[in-house]
Length: 350
Ligand code: NAD
Ligand code: DAU
Image 1 (cartoon, rainbow, N blue to C red):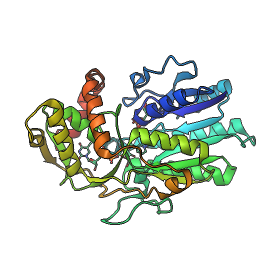
Image 2: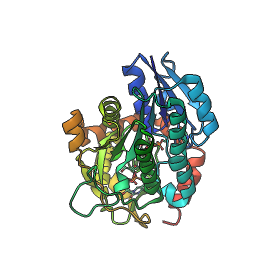
Image 3: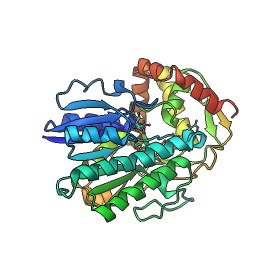
Image 4: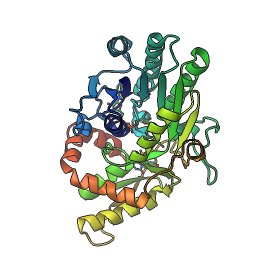
């Protein structure tokens, strides 16, 4: 039995990774460490939380003493690190939280793993999950490759870039057995409705304006979250120490085209006349420092590990819309309380 620590497992991507590992690997014990910030929700894992090989640990990755206690108690063999502050808009309002969790928290985890693993590193692994935003913003052509120089431009992406550098520094300096992946925009079930797709599904459902930043011409490369989880599983087991793997869907959309597609699907699903939801589109003040385009070259993970996305975007988007419509109580619960304050502050003067 291996003890695997997954951080941020109550969040969007983390919950998919925890579910995959708990169900696929009965001989692993999965420990999910999460602070349960506004973005963490144990309801995301209600289907597996009674599994004998699953334990939830509530705690903060910035708290080194707590990390030391749980490492001492459970003797983790590996860490899959997803815990982070993850929303660009929140990083513009409050950068310091991002520095604490994304940078200091990552170093606390690296330190505790290093202390406990010592030089018995042969069967250990520290897997850091990162983002394509560390590479900056692309022009009309080109793709982010693993060797693309870092050029982060938001407090969020700068904090993730910094944590990536530190993880690599521990590989070179201390021989820490690390692996890193940088993924493009994820979509799917259980995503907190501050991010574009679930936010707009919720607003369309409630006939609220759809706040499109700038002209809606920014481009993102969308990947179904379950495909990201499968890639994480592969990299965790077959990736090489010290290496980076880019993960992406080869699926670029301008925001406005994606939003129109979403409006079309929502009209179908809600039985509204075609064109009804598009009328909710409202162009608002642009995001500060809004990156123009992200697009991943996922050749390395395809060639070396045989990973490709399993479903088309059209299929994934329809599944995603259906999940949010069928899980109205989840959506209502996560958008009650503090969410209303966040929403008003974020969108009031736009
Ligand atoms: P999320 O915001 O949905 O979840 C983050 C989780 O981390 C939450 O459960 C939260 O409670 C937990 N957390 C936050 N601060 C913590 C702390 N100090 N200690 C312990 N737990 C804490 O994020 P997500 O979208 O699931 O992203 C997960 C990871 O994947 C992040 O590292 C993010 O940078 C990366 N990533 C996200 C995307 C994307 O499109 N969402 C794409 C590429 C990479
Ligand atoms: O590329 C990977 C990254 O993708 C992850 O590292 C981040 O954690 C994740 O949040 C995501 O970042 P983005 O900023 O690309 O995602 P977001 O859903 O916030 O926005 C997607 C696009 O939609 C972006 O161009 C901004 C735009 N947008 C977003 C919101 C919330 C709007 O036009 N209006 C909005 O209200």
